[in-house]
Image (cartoon, rainbow, N blue to C red; front, side, top):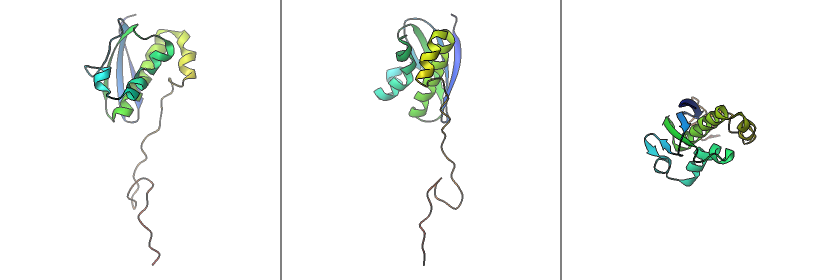
Length: 128
């Protein structure tokens, strides 16, 4: 398997993931996964497809992620990694699908409307 790239998205974040067989190195924006995501929760979200398919340590993964915050970025990496593993081995498709990792999470921030301070919040109503 030569090096391939895959794209994953979540909120306003986009992750481009390069994967090839290797020793299990996981690099995000030229930093290790542990350095880039300080919290264990975001590290677990990003590496969940590897845990589900029991393929940790089999691939070298390099990710370039842009936009959004760390939650969106970890979700984008998860989506790209799930797509990459699905392309590598068709037997993992059902497992990834069962954990809902191949579906793009299309929830976005609702836009602010005019005449209101936010998307849903209203200015205080005064009856008199």
